[in-house]
Image (cartoon, rainbow, N blue to C red):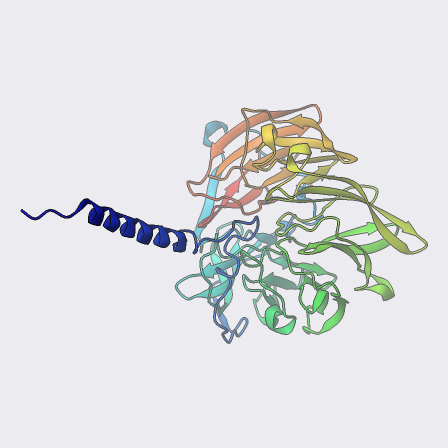
Length: 475
């Protein structure tokens, strides 16, 4: 029997070892991995699609008509006064005794978090039809949920943590929308007739945000106010004609965020407050300076931001964002027509009031909201802070009562708070304490993040694939 010399075996082993070592040094097991950076999830992935010809609002279907229900109005994101407070003199339920509340109607939707606006008995909602691959403005009856009409246009989208995200702005004459890929559309409120459409990406070189458009539009005295980013920062468009009436330069090349514009008046000057990707600013909203930047700051510029500016009292504004960005509290100052923003507090979520997605509620000198998941011991708790010190907590719901990314609204001196999985909580909250009055699972879906709307004793809420209307009037 032939036996290899011991030296030959050793040489063979050595050669094999060298080959393995060379392969190991050359092989990179994570070469296809990318660094996880807050706010960059799916960037240039969910939004990067081949160019296409989009004809905004070119398709329309009408089904039926209804009679107006006067004074049932939640006309835009955060309501008539931009503060997410319903001030109608209607008594609402305090608990869920006897099986309340009653679901009046429900409608299936494309995947998303877009929520409703209401005007005189008509519900307006942005929706994406994945079969038709179309962005739609749909109009429903508030009382019955019957669809009255829809106007849409073909635009390709890829699933990206939901599709539609925005809330229309409505006044007596117009409905204004921004679709997922920054197509703006203005139609007649009653008939749905198309007035005009603008593709912001084409006209203003707007960069579509990470998870599609999250900015909810604003109508101010028949002028559409849009934060474009790109070649302009903000623009004002006549709702009737579609003509640009003013624009704000964008010298720093700030980009569109998921946040929405909030109006405010300080020392007699009306302004539009916006947090872009790049910085924060106030733009004049009246007089000969309309469209002029009154003040700006880069003291707070997170890579992604969803909550909108929370306008407080005496010229204070709270800006907040998720992914560990924390918050910034500023004080506006004015000297002979010149405005500036002084930083009062800047902090991380562990140190004070913050928010992942929803915009806090300011009420009677206090700020209310749900803490983000990175807020340490107070994560997901409903909290209260005084408006002049957002780093000193006054009240919380406690360790046993926590919420998710879902919305909350103040109506009839009670907070209605929706959990991620469709559970609705009714609670009283004040600097002296938090008390749960009742809670009930209303829908069996997930990601119930779309903002709530309450008007006429009706509450509109949604999860990722359906919207329901419930009657919350007290008996």
